[in-house]
Length: 240
Ligand SMILES: [Zn+2]
Image (cartoon, rainbow, N blue to C red):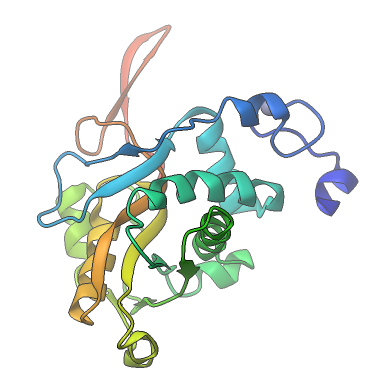
């Protein structure tokens, strides 16, 4: 990438100078997606698949892509998302990114979730799938940042926060398409469940949820770190 060369890029996985993701770290990425049911599982959640666990190099890649627009990570992240979506692609699929909160994409100058979803659709098409990426969902706003909220609070915060504009649905009317909700990280599943609800409310079929990565199972809202001073509890950083 141009900016990587000018600014002296480094691998987000290991810090080696050069590409945004070096060959070694790229080769070490998970090759197999996995079912990623959150605990507790939001009622009625469609089957969730994730391309990787949310830690290590994958976590660094997602954060760098989201916060610093490191474009060289778009393809490998798209490949992880595509692997998860492929598990749900039984026929033509429309990959639907969860919408950004109003203002957040503009503030960053890009829409990282849509960018990854579009990348995943390109990967799937190159593998012979009939896949497109379409922004079918819009956020109504009024949602507070999810960081620090537990699963129940997230669900309440998000209830009714997304909708599917009727013009988007009319374009798909009469085509036997299934949708897949796409996001970067699955944490509690509250965001994915709300996106699923909004698509189903518009009469669309949701085949499942696909994410680049999923947090590992743990106590709701807390994670345990072991360091030299013993055990510590902390809240997850990611805001689902
Ligand atoms: Zn590396």
